[in-house]
Length: 285
View (tube, rainbow, N blue to C red):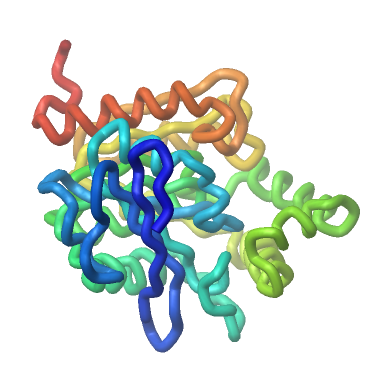
């Protein structure tokens, strides 16, 4: 167990569909539960569930989940999807339906295995899209959701950003940087991610039809200079969901607001979560 600034962390494995996913409990204060995959020891506040980006892992969140859990006095769950970080290697090609698979199949199994009945989803990039899809299909189990740089349709800026990343993977130290987190899985997860988004058949991918099914309160965050998506993504999310929704556009910020504008994002997320818990969401102060 690792303790840092009054946050305790416990790593464990979750068995889903015959493979193991690496996960971590985060709890402010003492104790993180008596069982590896249990939320015993957490208070009665909702669990913050962190969903990483398209090339992400637990370590790539750095200390942000711990800081948010400490600020809100909520327990948190961070996990790595199949093929990422220290989870089992992805042994087959990933379907172009992978975001739906994660939202509708894998995430519900994870929440059940970890005995999480009340959650606030916090998703970055692909993780934000997964959060949106899951919330659309689980009206009564998602208390609220926060997205950072989520995509709901494909844009030219998205494709241009991925093409640039492909060049960097070949010609710079990007591969070595990612390998620090994903080891031998690095090539497969990178090319699977890039190939899926750059496939011409994926050009018409669009989840806007699911957004009106979302009734949980939502906070959509995006950097003004996001290299993978325009502000049209946030506008679509906020305009189409049925629940109360707010957006935050951060100036001089790119694709990773929780690192590039950490203090702003931490404060805004903390406020959103506290209002949500206290049933004062979006009411005038």
